[in-house]
Length: 292
Image 1 (cartoon, helix red, strand yellow):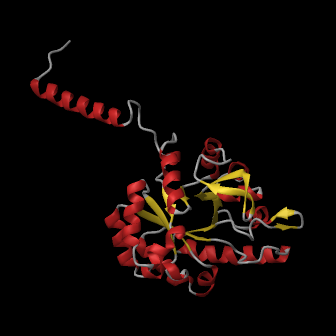
Image 2 (cartoon, rainbow, N blue to C red):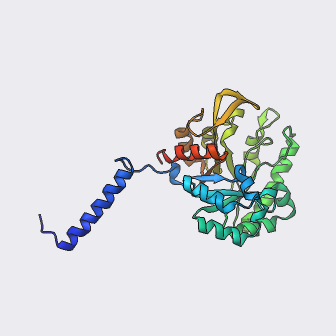
Image 3 (cartoon, rainbow, N blue to C red):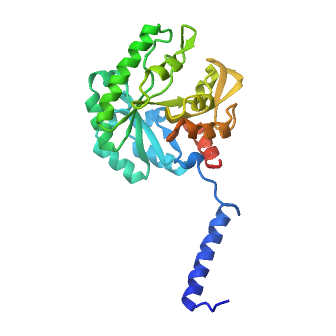
């Protein structure tokens, strides 16, 4: 063995000590990565009261402390509770100060129709690249085929404007999307009618209670998804809305290993826990414990 210089000896000793400390902190094993190797995110809608009360900085601090590195907002121009964030430059500064990033937000269809450019400007100033809407149908849970076609055509046009501004338009799945038309699920019809380059999808995990299984959709429609709203659901329990009671990740009926494996096929680029703070803390802890 070649002789080791004094400098090399101390450099190796320091490196070994740092590695030993790292392994000890990980319980003697290699630290597990977040699922998909992506930051754990939080959709802030369940925490909107704090934002309305002017406590956005405190919310960011709390989320960061429990392991959240990315958030999804709602538009300050379309959601009343988020109005305190209307100053995009100030919002961007608060995000920067907290170390939490934000590349996505939800926008109302009304603002997309009436003032889309203002919404784009607000999102761009903060540094977002994704703009989503919760549903194309508002409260229309029993649409006709003409309703679905009209909604898809309108949203393709909205998404084309967003694309010109280098924004990816996306669609969440609420009542309208999980309805049925002529014996088919509206969500599947929208998959056919929305331009795959202009519109990506954000899967609401809790819709498993209505028969929509994320892993099945990610596999059936590769590359069509960009995001997930994360919750778990106990399908063996009955709640106020019928079958299924929401719970934290790993405590319900969703197969998360299968879900995240399929998410790679689906094209998922980010995911956000969308739950109250108590469940958010439990779900974030569970996500941190999963293999990447």
